[in-house]
Amino acid sequence: STAEFTLLSPLSNTVILITSINATAFYEQTEEVGTIHHREPFEVPPGISQTPRLPVDLNLGGIGYSAVKKALGDSLEMSAIAEVGVLVENFRDSILYKGDAISANVRL
Image (cartoon, rainbow, N blue to C red; front, side, top):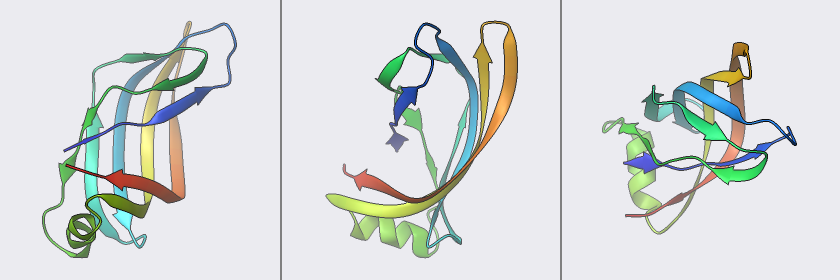
């Protein structure tokens, strides 16, 4: 399984480098659907862009996986928490992201 995200950089002249992603997605805010542990850096140019396809480790047990199977060909609302490593010029930091009501298209 993979995931792809649309990003919007607020910086008009500077490229952001995503250096790492540790993320977990949840169904109904408690049932773990899957995780992303990505260590290959990729660039986020100014404006709107797409991430590369990021490998997702699905949690094959529980209600979350059942919800993903039922949503095939449709969308599924999830929440997520992620720690994202970023590098902007010489400034390195990590950002904690928490999101609710994230709509994901589920397809084969």
